[in-house]
Each structure stands twice: as C-alpha cells, then as structure tokens.
Image 1 (cartoon, one colour):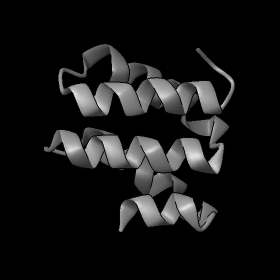
Image 2 (cartoon, helix red, strand yellow):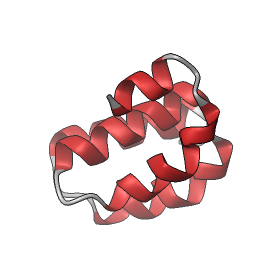
Image 3 (tube, one colour):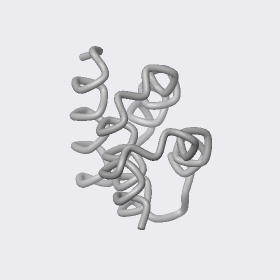
Image 4 (cartoon, one colour):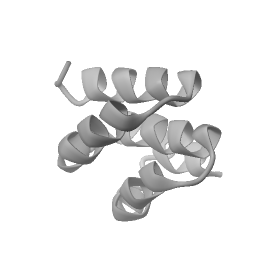
Length: 74
C-alpha cells in the first residue's frame, strides 16, 4: 500500500511517509523511502538523511539511498 502511494503520485501522503521512516519494521521504512523517492519529495531530504544515518536494515538502507538520489541528494 505505501509503495503504491509513490507509484500513483499521491503527494498528500508525503507527511505520512516521512513519519513512516520511524516505523518499527525495516520493510515498512524501506517502502516509505521508496515512495518518497518516487514522489521526488524534496521536503523529505533531511528526514531521509537522518533515517539513513541510523538505519541498520539492508533493504531500508538501500531504498533510502536511492530515494535521496532520486530527489537530487547523494
């Protein structure tokens, strides 16, 4: 579901997706990051950088790196 928000370009979801960077599961954090990148959510730059700095889950780390590249950081 969260990945679909980015795929369909649902920009009103950006604040919720940023909040999900703090989710309990790495898969959920990774999906939120993927959607933020797909949306080109430049306002998520700092939250993504902070989340990546503390992330230990490999999937979430990769999705955060890619999201930062997609929004022009990285």
